[in-house]
Length: 334
Ligand SMILES: Nc1ncnc2c1ncn2[C@@H]1O[C@H](COP(=O)(O)OP(=O)(O)OP(=O)(O)O)[C@@H](O)[C@H]1O
Ligand SMILES: [Mg+2]
Image (cartoon, rainbow, N blue to C red):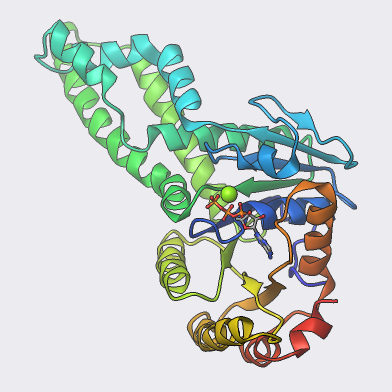
């Protein structure tokens, strides 16, 4: 078993992230294919580019859809803008009241403020949709495909951002409450207080699952190139700050052939970065994936990638370095 512990029953939420174009979507879906052999699995795409449906060559939408041709596997797209529009529609009154009761703003100011985004709210709402799916418990594994690094980080950092906003809103409310109590002697909690409390609970629930090592894991995908390594390093440092569980890294696009001059040159360049990867991500187990002769599209190719991800040995950084640098990769990945 290559992807360590991913078959563990407790592990529910598995997020894939990394630099643009390194193979996140391919690896996320291929992993879901393998998991679906044993577990009822849901792929959640948070990438507005809809690449999950392109990769699977079947349309997916904002409702859960079973994947034709793969038993036990479904997929859904979650869109931050859509989730935010829903939230604003649902809480328009409370947001207006929060501003009306707490400041000296006139109607135009309030309307203007309502069109501004609350920091983190769109990503929190899209994470909230993910969380609701996990809490409904209709699936055993939830695989999240994120858009490139910045997006994954926005998703992960959104609870903190929103929490900051809630604190300010709560302070404004506290002043309002103080004033009302002063004039009328009592204060009845209203729908604005209820909304803030519910937002606070959402933030907490998201933080709880993200930081629960037994339930959630983040799998970075990297390729042996300078910029991808640097970006992955930054991503991992940020994720560590948020106490996200990371145990293993997929190193994709490893060249196998040295048969022609071009391949020889590319492979020489890769060897340098393979060494750098093994020396940079020293605490992670490594999953080498060879560059395939064709793009990973359609069910058959995804199944093959799934077998590569799950079929080989689990490598420590130094084992990865020697395996990925020479011909052993061929044997390891058969
Ligand atoms: N091991 C591989 N061998 C050959 N082609 C690959 C491999 N891994 C990924 N690809 C191809 O590389 C391209 C990018 O892969 P993918 O869409 O999975 O990356 P991504 O990280 O999700 O990209 P984005 O950042 O745009 O979401 C796709 O055409 C995919 O088929
Ligand atoms: Mg993608």
